[in-house]
Length: 69
Image (cartoon, rainbow, N blue to C red; front, side, top):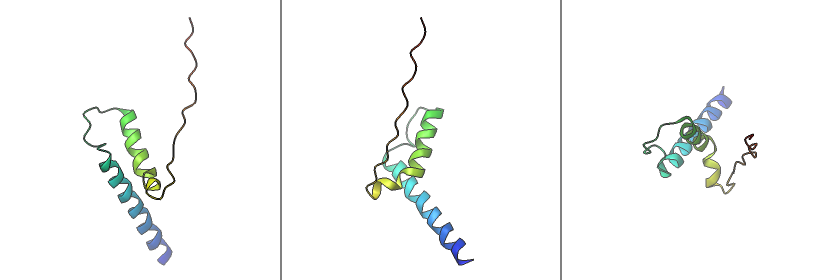
């Protein structure tokens, strides 16, 4: 029972720190509304706290194929 409370508290704190990171980057004040912006915001909320401990996560996109002629 106590483990659930501790884990729940840690998850809530993690998400609050992620929201703070998104607010610091002004992600909620952009005029554009698109799926890519929403994905960027969600990614920042979930992964953003890692920046504060120095991990600095990056995402590498695979190369896209060239269009056919």
